[in-house]
Structure formats: C-alpha cells, structure tokens
Image (cartoon, rainbow, N blue to C red; front, side, top):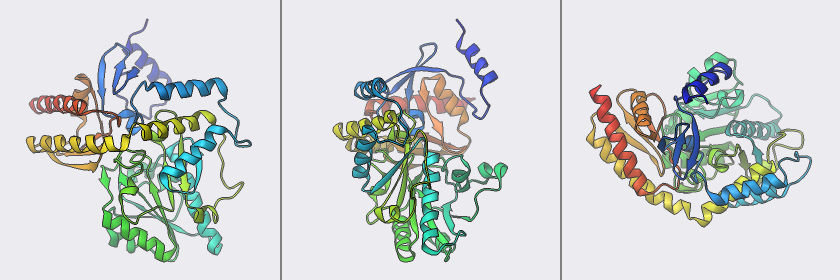
Length: 402
C-alpha cells in the first residue's frame, strides 16, 4: 500500500496544477472533525470553504441522498422531477424570492444572474451596451463572466479581454458607486459579505442606499450570497439582516447542498417576467434529482435544528474569543465579520500560521495574504471554539519564535 506522500506525488503527475494544496489527503469526516489518510484527527474550521454547514456524517442528510441514488439520479430538464419541485418551493420560501434556476456551481449562478440582468435591460430599450457595476476586492468565480465582475486585476489580466462594460466601485463607498451610474447602468452586483476579498460585510447604510438608487433608476440589485448565505451569518441569507433591502436577483451555492455540487440564482417575478425565456439559458445537470434532494434536506434540517439561532449564539462567542486573541497579540490588527464568517487581519502573511495549525490538527484557511478566515461547520459548539483558540494561540507563539 502506498503512503500518503506517494499518493500525493501521483496526484501531482496527473492533475492540472491549478491549486497549491496543503500536503494532506483527507479520507473521512465525523461531525466537525476530519481524518487524514494516516488517521490523524483535525478540528475543521474551513468546512470545505463554507460548504459543509451541517458537519460530516449527518445521518438524516446522508440517508436521503442514498435513497435518491437508488431511485433516480438524472432526467434532464426536458422533464420535471419531484426533488427539484420541492427544492424550488423551499428555496423561494426561505429567500422570499419568486423564481429559481438551479445550476451546478456558484460561478454558474453568477453567469446566469449576469445574463438575466442584461436580458432585462435589453428588453427595455433593445440596446446591447449596458453596464454592470461590481465591487473592488470582490470574488465571484473563475468562469469568464464571473471573472469579469471579480474586482481583483490579478485574476482577470491573464485572460483578457473579459466581457465588456463592467465598472468597479469601492465596497461601502456610496459616492464611488454614484460616480459610475449612467443611463447605460443595468445592474449593481456585490457580495453582501465579501469572502475571498477579506471578510468585509456591507454597511447597512451603504446597502440601503444602493437599494434606493436601484429603485429610482430601474437598475437591478444583484446580491452574491454564495459564501455568506445559507445561515452562515445567523440569517438564512445575509441580506435579510438589512431593513428595506431585497435583491432583484441573488445567487446561492456552497452550503446550499452541503457537499453536493449545486447552485442557484433566484429572482423576483418582475425580473422573471421580463428577462430569460425558453432557449436563453440552460444546463444539462442543473436541478437533477440528487442535487435538489440535497437542497431539500439541508433546508429541512436547518429549520428543524434551529441552525440560525445556534449560529447567532456561537457566532457571538467566536467574535468574543477572537477579539481577545487580537488584543493579546501585536501581530494581529483587527477582527471583522458576521456570525460564523469571520476574519482576523494580521500584520504579515498568515501562511506560516496556517501550516502550523495543520501540524497541530486544526484546519484554517486565508482570505487574502494576511487574513485568517474562520468558516467552520454551523453546528460547532463553544467547546470547539475554545479548542480552536487554544491551538491557534500556540501556533502564533511558535511562529513568532521562529
């Protein structure tokens, strides 16, 4: 039998090198813990990048997927299927949106949202030169459309030209948005809480004023809830914490399926009735029975287990503990975030701390070079926060000595 190192060498020979992976092969998970190929146990504060909201090995979730595998995996969108019908009902109910299109990923959801916004504008005046305002430091995915609205030049430049007519404003700077609005503006797109860009929540006044501007000028508000949605901030979707704010189009993925690859974009009836029609958009696998069964069960468990109130409680506890850690160490500058989507800004690159954490059995990731990101399973308890803080403190001390 090969060692873990030998398997990783084999992977590097066969896989396209587009990821700088940590030198670990995870083999199984249990609740909020992961186990590598050698049996070493890790406390997981990454959750597959904010995906595994329910933790690992949830029996009710797993059993529902096993049952669906034995029934039906795929039909195509030439036909209806029951899980997709039920998932569309549940998802529109928890979001307050009216229509949903199921995709296979978050990037695909962004692609569909962009197309819907442009079609909406096209049907108003027949023009194809409309503009979308996105935010600097945003991240929406790596497909060409999603990359075009991602506010980080280093991701875009090697693949220019992008889709055109995208303008970038500053998050939480209303005047920078106003300066870009003109008669061609058809949509304003932002993450309600920026993830990869550094864990920046939208200020309430900023988002509320953006909503007012969109209403006044018939501009569509597109909110990316791929990472911050599905309960992570203590609301099913982060925008639901902002009075008077509701998107015209929103995207979801990651924890939407809790491990099964699935995404969605949703819209109001107003947009649905004046944008995409038959033939405008499609996907072979989107809305397949397995993926939509996952959505159904995720929503059902979240409601039954009162995950939102749990996140509010544990999120407040995590904030308290992280704030104390920031006060303790000079190498840390500040904490920011909402619920169980937190970031700690450090004065130097955090790579060495993350590597030390893995050595000590703790999985953490970054959000930018100098930010430690905390996006654990939503089912963690205070004891897990305490364990994480203890390990992280030891890792900081060790890196400062080296």
